[in-house]
Every structure is written in structure tokens, then in C-alpha cells.
Amino acid sequence: MKKIYTITALLFSLGSATLLQAQRRLTEATISYDIVINTSNKTPQAADLLDGATSVVYLKSNSSRADMISSLGTQATIVDGKSGNVTVLKEYGEQKYMITMTPANWKESNKKYEGVSFTYVEEYKTISGYNCQKAVGKLADSSTFNVYFTRELVPVNKDFQYLNRNLPGLAMQYEATLGNMLVTYTVSGINFNPVQQSKFDLPKSGFRVMSYEESKGGKPVN
Image 1 (tube, one colour):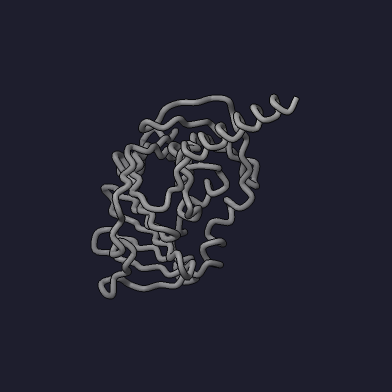
Image 2: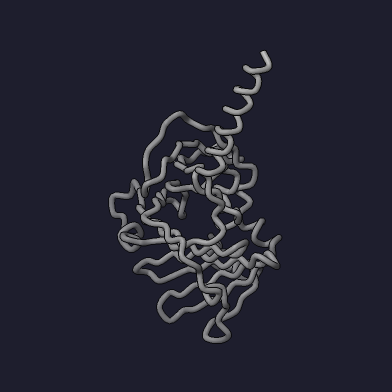
């Protein structure tokens, strides 16, 4: 009996070691997502303008920067890992806005994603070389969205994707809403090279600075 117990304990230890070895704590990386717009509109003008859009996420410790790039312009969301403050930079043609947000503002702007619960489905596919499992997220309003995530990469910083922050791994493909459109983000590549600290520097001029409260008078911050 003692021998069986010893063998069982050894196998458990080997299994745990394999799992830990397979997982990688994601502290620094550049993650590129391709964006596909799905709309039921027969004249999808907005979708056409966003056709070919990409999202590039830069992670460095607890700081992050997410750039959405389209033919309309660019929008960057920068999360300061030390203070928790968030800055949104919008550049659309000649219009340049810098929206400053406190951690409380950031939480308020993402309130529809609070309390997201996930149901895990035994359905898998490979995305950019990583084994990904399907999960169905349910929002407080009972609406749902699909996501494929990998347990092989576990982000240290969870705030760069608020709706996916309760997942036990990195979202490799997920759905989100942009106005009345359904948007699908799919990882096209991950680079583990060091991210320059300058990516998180804020511009000192050229932007109209607005508080979160002031920005709510116009279009909502996504």
C-alpha cells in the first residue's frame, strides 16, 4: 500500500510539473489581433471603413497599451501599471484627443463587463500554434459572447481586456460589440521580445486633453 501511495504521489508531482512547465506567465509581449466586423446591415458602410482593422497589444509587467488601427484612424488605450490610471488617445484625421481616466473611471466605462461569468466548453482549436478551448461569456444583461483561450499563456496584467480578465489564460479569439456591430478579434501573432518603455509615454502636446467626465458629452469611450 505504501509503495502504491509513493508511486501515485510521484505521478501527481510529475503531472503538476508538466502543467507548470506548459504554462507561461505573460509579463512582456506584443500581441497582434486581426479584426473582422460582422453586421446585418445591407449597406455596411461602417464595417467597410473598419475593414482590415487590427489591434496591437503591448504588455510590460502591469502596464499595457492597446492600439486599434483602421482606415478611420487610431485609438490607443494605455494602462499605467503603477497608478492604475488609464489614458485614451484618439487620432482621427486632424482631430486628436487625450482622455484621462482614474481607476474608478475605467471601472465605470467597463461596467457592462462587471461580473462576467464563463462556461467552459469541450471544444478546441489551434490558433497561432496554441491549443485553445472555447468558453461562453455571460454578461449581467444575460447577453453572451464566444471566446477561445489558451491556458498555455497566462497574462499577469488582466486589465488590458476587461471582458476577458476572469479567464484562466489568454484570449486568442473573442467577440465584442462596437455600437450595433459584432466584432471578432483573432490573434495573428505574438512576439515575446522586450517592449520599449517609450510605448507607454504620453504625448506632451498636440492633443486636446479631456477628463473622462468631459468625454462622456460626446461618443462613449470603448
